[in-house]
Length: 109
Length: 109
DNA sequence: GTGTCGTAGTATGTCTGACGTAGTAAATAT
DNA sequence: ATATTTACTACGTCAGACATACTACGACAC
Image 1: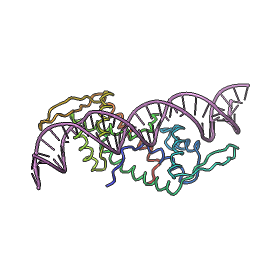
Image 2 (image 1 turned 90 degrees about the vertical axis):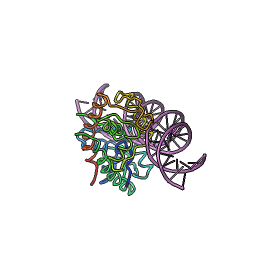
Image 3 (image 1 turned 135 degrees about the vertical axis):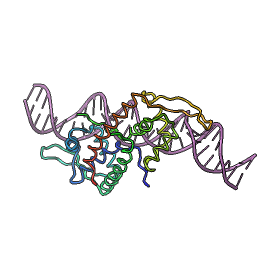
Image 4 (image 1 turned 135 degrees about the horizontal axis):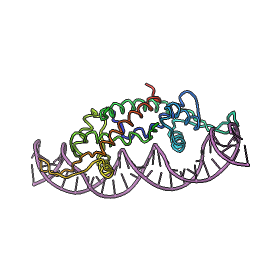
């Protein structure tokens, strides 16, 4: 039986970011907007949290970065998810299911 | 609109402990066993995590402690939930609902 | 009579993710 | 001209989780 770590949503920023990279590469500002929109404004990721997540995930091999000049002439750092990143994302989804089940037992509705 | 903090399950140990104190006072070893049992062994709280949660929550006014000699002659530190603790617990339950809704948007099943 | 297991903790220190604060710089809106 | 939006980087702090280690008592086996 898998034991879930107690350090849970704390690490779910990474999962949210990876989800948004599944379809195509993206960059900080865009990811930030998408998280805000997808969550209906309920969750707004802090810039420092976001960019440090990029750094951490690149170090862990879950994403790779490349620099590119956008239509508007600004240079952006884009991030692309790797196979290891996809794997990590799916593992986190499984962990989330387990976590939900556990936490639910201690919640009163 | 309430914004959820990104520091989430990380703080849910407190919620689980408080849940187990709702009915009657209890102590570390017992709480630990109950968490393991209620979660079907999926979550086993670490001793240090548990006892530091007690210290923190007492400081925050969510629980109070008293020492008592048990049937077996051993001295135990019992903890009792306070009104502020009950309030905190319910707030956490609400937060959990919100968090679930948000995270779900980024999870693939 | 000794060793191990279960009970019931305490002490100390480290690590990590989140985030506060601040600053840079170019493009766009007013 | 100025403010706002876009798109970051740098630096430092904090809290919760947890690793490691230690104490102490009772029961029970061998």
